[in-house]
Length: 252
Image (cartoon, rainbow, N blue to C red; front, top):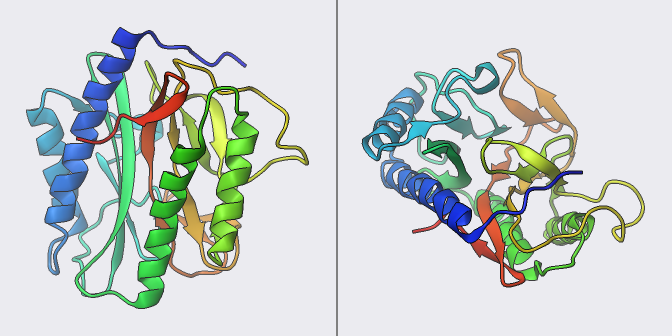
């Protein structure tokens, strides 16, 4: 497995692309209000990314039609923006990618619309807390499978399940690079597979289901839901391994 090791100046280019992702997500969160449509939010995100001199990297990627993944309620990832207008109590996930000077950024958040239920608050918190916990555990020499195992244990300790067949990933000159990083242990031993090294840059993205971990892709070819038909959540950061620890690039 050829996992790229980035030089400090390359990491700074990735940081610049990811800062635009972070500020775009902040803009969308501020405008997550009852009555705004998913297509309006998508256009807002695209306009802002372009105003910052970057390109929305998801638009056209593998045929995806929009700039922002807007994953509503039961849709956990890859939601296509529609004319649907947000309602009180909805849960919406935003996943955004950018390209700046040939380097890529990627991050995601899930947020509630107005007042949401305690169950949905817990669902969103699980994705966010899993992500931050995982980042805090990373150290040079740890295996990626160990990291996946830590995320799985954390998610299940909260009473939820990690969505299967989708994963985090490397990032750099392409939006998706090696390695693949599931949110659960594949195989029997976490003490196998490649190790985390200084200079590696990758995306962690816990995808949370309530009861069943089987993923189903809906008829539009993109929206991913759980086989349990219940709401999900999703959080993501791009991190770089610097001085033996993970540093979040997708924040301002």
